[in-house]
Length: 581
Image (cartoon, rainbow, N blue to C red; front, side):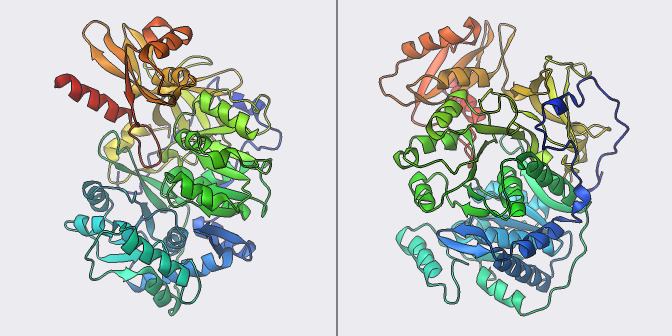
C-alpha cells in the first residue's frame, strides 16, 4: 500500500452493541455528521475567516489577531510557499510552541495544498532527524529557540527551505516594538536562543512580506488529500506518521462541535489553549473546532510555567479550557487559580490521559464544574468518545470515557478475534470517518492497525455497559499480571491519588520470580510526612491484596511527555536498571 492509499472497506456485519449508546445521547445531539459540508479544511477556514472577520481569533502574549488578519497572513504564507516551489502534496514541518505564527503557517500550508507535519519543538536531534527523513519534508518553520536542533538534524534530510520565527513575531503592527523587545529579552537576557547557523533561512516576517507582494494561485484540495502527517508511537518505538485526510479532520471537528452544541454559543466563547497546538487533541479541538464557532482563543506558550499562565489569564474571563489531568492538578495547586471566579466557565475538557477521580472531584469542588472526559488517539484525528453534556449523571465524574461521538462505531474485540458483548472486556476498536488513512510509508503497520473492514485496533482494553458508556481498563502494554490476575495501573493510581498527602502517582509492573510481576508505585508527596506504611495501609482499604503495591518509591517528580503524560515506560526502565546494579 502506497502513501495516501487507504485500507479496503468491506460491508460491516451488525453487532448487538452497535448503537445502544444513542438512547443515552442528549436530545440536541444528532447521530450522524456530514463531512461533505466542507470540501476541505481550506473551505472551512475560508468560511470562518469571512464569517467572523471582525472578531479576535487568537491571543498571544497579550496581543490579538483578528480572523480577517489571520486569513490575510495565512494567504501570504501560502503564496510564499508557492514562490519557493512548494507543490501540493509536499510536506511542510511546523516546529514551534503556541504563538500566533503557528495558526498562520498551519493554514497557509493547507491553502498551498501541502501536508502539515507537526513537530514537537522539544525533540532531540535524533528524534527530529527521524521525523524529517521519514516524512521527506523539504520545508520547515521553526521557532528560533529550537533552530540549533534543526541545524544539527539537517544533514541527511531533504530540507532545503527553512523559515525561522521568534516568539515576538506578529505581535504588533508596523515596527512591532513589543515583539522585538520580547525577542531581544529572550535572546540576550533569558539566553533561551542557543547560537545557530542557518545561513539560507528566511525570517517569517520577510516570508509574509514576500508572499503578500505576489498573487496566489488557488489550489483545489479534496476530502481524500492528506492534510496532516501526525507522528505517534514515539514513546513505544519508532515514531510512525498517521496520515489524516481533510475528510478525517473535518469529520472530527464536526463531531466535536455536534457534541458541544448545547454548551457553546457562537461568537461568545473564550477558550484557553495551554496544550501545544502541534498535539492532535489541541489541534482538532482548540485550533479547529473553536475556530468554527468564532471563539477567542488564548494561546499559552509554556503551560509548565504556571505563573506565566496565570498572568495570561488575569484579564480573560474564559468560558472553556482543555487540558490534561496533570495540568489541572498543577493549576489547582496555584493560589491565584483557586481564588478565581469560575462563574463564566462552561466547559472544562480533560483528555490525552486518564483523569484521576481525586483530581476531578477536587476540580468540581473548586470550580463548580465537572471535568468532561474525552477519549481519542492520533489515528482517529483524535476524538472517539466523550461524556455528553446534559446527560443524566453527567454532572458527576463517573470515570467513564463517555459515549461514541456521532457517526462512530465502537466495539470490544476479544483475544480470539470475536466481538465482546455488553459488560465484557476486549480491545477497543473504532470505525468511523475520523479513522486515519494509514501510516505514512508503512503498509505493514497499517495492516496491523486497520482490518479489511476499516476497524482500527486502539490497544486499549475497555468495557461497554448497557447504556453504551465505555470504561477503559487500561492499555494492553501497561497491564500487569500478578499471580495470574490482570492488574491495571489506572485503578491503582486512582486509589493512591485519592490520598490527601499524594500529589502524583504512577504504577508499573516489575518482574518477580514467584508471582510473575509485582506492583510498584512511584509517588510524589503533597505532604512530606507521608510514609510508605501510611500509604500501603490506605491502599489495603481500597484494593484487593494482589493489587496493593509491593514496593513504593518516593520521587520529587514523575517523567512526563511534553504534554504531561506520565511515562510509565521510563519508570520501568529505571527500576530495571537499578535492579541490575
